[in-house]
Image 1 (tube, rainbow, N blue to C red):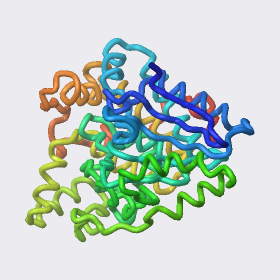
Image 2: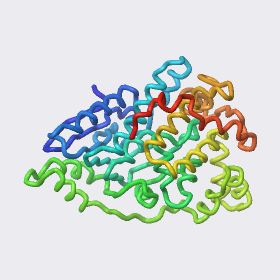
Image 3: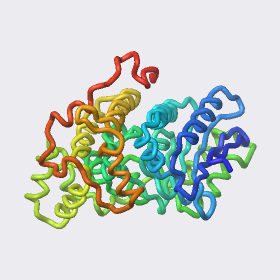
Image 4: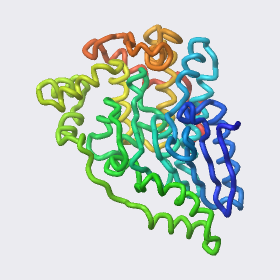
Length: 364
């Protein structure tokens, strides 16, 4: 059975991610398939709008996409398989394609939406969540950074909430995403099948008019999430990670202690890289951010300036602890946030390729 199901019905290109046993985690084959389908629909006169959803073990909806298949990336990395580079080349190009797509794209972001799932949906013209939505960018937990366009969309969240989300991996539930600017509307999960079907029914209306009708049925506002503490902007806007850590220690309240506890569990090295990435992302367009991310991810798996690659890299170790051995005990190197130096972080932002040989040089 195909992990990507597609159909064209009444002017609507319909895509269903269909790998529910893995929460629709993206493989190289899946991102290649998605890229081919979306590219083909650009000039297809039968497609006026595009809608994308994910299947769960219970059927349609209930899970959107948990991100990239990190177990497959782990296996490829320790075997020096070029599939690692192929995956990120295609995935980031796909992210850019969604942002720049010339036809309206609707993302039904029900259930788990993380990492690459965010990259697949954040560029959509209409991003719909439900009360079941569980959204996060938890990459620092696996020794990675907030990729798949995270430097672009997180940096555009209100205040310093993007830095907070990147460093902590805080989960957004349902309408939280609207408050943070990471969704456009919310609908009860039980109505999603009806909303999906409404795009291809009532054929007296054009596809665009059906989309407008759908939008009228959605709620566009949500209550502020309880975790959105007023201290976030004051603390996470500080210039350096060490100043953020010091401010959390000085705050000495329950929220600060819990936040500090979470951050201390993440990769110290990639916390520094992620913070710098978000800060740079604010001044970048999506194409330039994805080009920067492609540079960063190359260094994550081949950290030559630290003499580390494959199984010794921070990212592979993080994936091992979370998803392979599942011992939840990554051996971060260095082990403490305080031991990270600029000489360890700065080379991540230096391209290993001349500008015209960058794998994503063609993105506009």
